[in-house]
Image 1 (tube, rainbow, N blue to C red):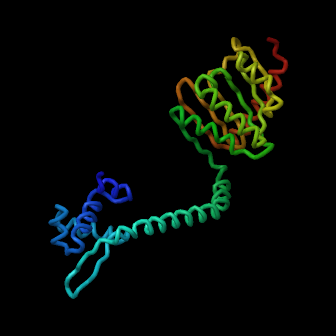
Image 2 (tube, rainbow, N blue to C red):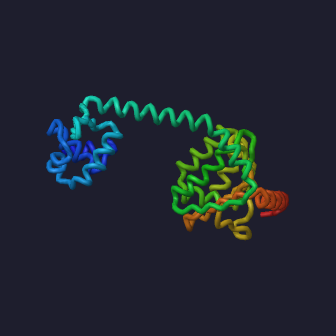
Image 3 (cartoon, rainbow, N blue to C red):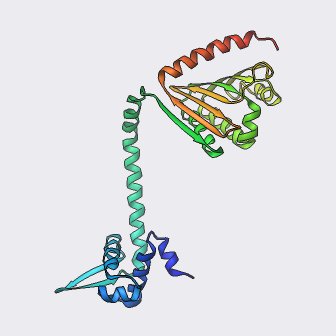
Length: 255
């Protein structure tokens, strides 16, 4: 078993772990002795020891003009990390308390347009999941190719996404190109809180996915594994109006 490697996993660098191991074997030592046993320069050992003292791995005792360093009892390491866990929990609690206020500050500046780009399949799933942040009763307007969603995101992801959207009570209206996958989705519109209108794939091919919700417009090109999120109240407002126009038109289109 490589003990030093395991100690490095505790958050120590290679040099810090080496110095701590040397001190454990020595019991105690001064700078010169520690440098010799750890094969490091004295100037390096000073900074390494300072870090180890801050982290609680080493104790410094001053005897007159001399400095003697002791390795902390290994049994106390678990206590050190219990304290670290406690600090992390305290930070998580602090974040939870301040998050609503930070969110309100973020929303206050939401009028300022922003554009975010995503590449790769996992990134596309991440950005697609932004639509699940809506509240119950909020609506997503969608131009969609059901075949592309299943082909690129996968049946399992689509099933989980639909289940989460349904559970959260987020509704959807979709204009989708006609396909076997889209027809299957259409059968489950009511239970999946969706209204779907199918249009001819021949005359209205959808090579990408567009979602419009709140002040955002999400555009995904599955074939390119590329996505864009535009945050703009004005752009979202216009795109919602265009969707409504398309929604009215899709009702009158004959296959």
